[in-house]
Image (cartoon, rainbow, N blue to C red; front, side, top):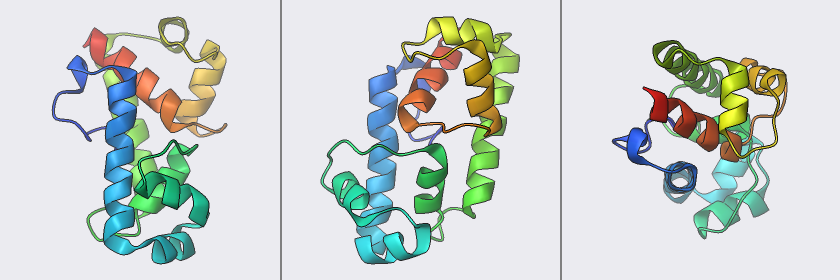
Length: 141
């Protein structure tokens, strides 16, 4: 479910986490097929082909969840997103870290308020941002 795409995320860089997320998504696209995933997820074909071909693809967490939800290995897209958010918030609690500290600890140009909005689903939350935030949380736990 993205956050567990690697066995030990605490030893991974944001780039390694992002690559693992993309591999997880590409495996779904390979298994289900580009056309079927596009029809069911609403993600455009070009983006899915980029994932399949191991090329950069700009995806939000919600789009990634919609891709995962096209296979029986994962629950529906909403459940994937909710579980991901819960995992990040629990990690923040365990690490005793707030959104302002996270914002200062990542390379993405986000304020603490923007990190909070992304975690709450009130703004677009990209896979790149997820990788940076997850890595920052994991380094502190």
